[in-house]
Image (tube, rainbow, N blue to C red):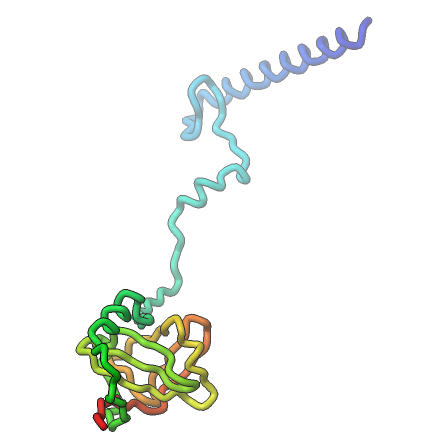
Length: 189
């Protein structure tokens, strides 16, 4: 006999015995109500490894819930259009005005800050919404150039930026504190 014919005969015998086993099992189960039976006498037997999606849809049991509320404010450098507009307002004649530092309180409301610019090695120029200029001296180990792209500060409960309390995080990754704040006041010669 040819090998293909032997293979087909073996498969026919196996399928006949499988059908007979299934029919016997179905007769056995007819007396019992089966909650997982499918129509046509098929059983609802699925390997546990194939139930991944069903397990994923089940809600997770939370043992501990922790809710944190954090507000981070970004102060960015002034845009080119804003700088150009401020420069357009300057008189065209030579300026005789120079700026001098004057005392300022140790805290400043964060919602008044409009933009920031590095000024020198260890100072930031802060511009408020009412166009006041403030100079913020950074800690000794900090470089103002790290704040060329602005900074992030976490909003405190009182909503103010205070000397030696709040940390400024530059967008480059440096973290610094302000050691002093002062107003820049125009002085005419």
